[in-house]
Length: 315
Image (tube, rainbow, N blue to C red; front, side, top):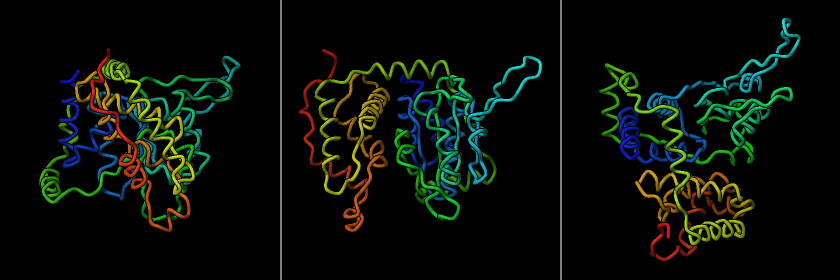
């Protein structure tokens, strides 16, 4: 599947210029059955990135623009009484799709945000006691704007923990900015973005990524990183067991994109901050010293000893 993953990345890089690493990490999250939180200022291409992935992967996608009056039933659906059958009939919400773009998720109430919790963790929704299984694959690409707090609700820690990775696209460099303005003056690159796979093939790739081998020494390395975060004096809430599992899943997907069937310590290092920084809650002491979660995770990578460079393939 290496050829297909290369084609996926190539198509999306045509649409989002100069952001190869961020695009790769979104694909890592998708292959790891994870969800992505894109936090950035307006106009940096967050929504365009989600649309490009949906088109390139051949996935059914829906978009919800989160506002203060968005209701949980808009997301997960609701039941209506059917006179013909005399029973409640489920009317699906936006969640019944392969790729859900949750635009400006921090603009809605905590109650509506929490409607996504079951779907993101268990790939199902429950309405009036009836459970409805979501299509596979199922991915949430959520965006939030860190600028301007009016009308926003911070995502609770439990919700943040459901996102496999948190990314920021940032502004493009000057050369990419020039190309973007020149190309979009006449056309929209999304119109020329090819579909190179479909949901069935993507599911196969996800299963192959899941089967990537992790040696016990790598598991021990991830556990040491998690434990070090929990005893860090600047951290109130360290990396949870769910977070440690997320690191392993993302590392497998990263190895798969590199064409390997085994994980190395470098796979852990490359995805660790993106997977773990948003899961860490800092103490007031850390904020006083202007420490950030990203700085804490980078320090953990520097202080916890990596396994030695022996063979990590299946024995």
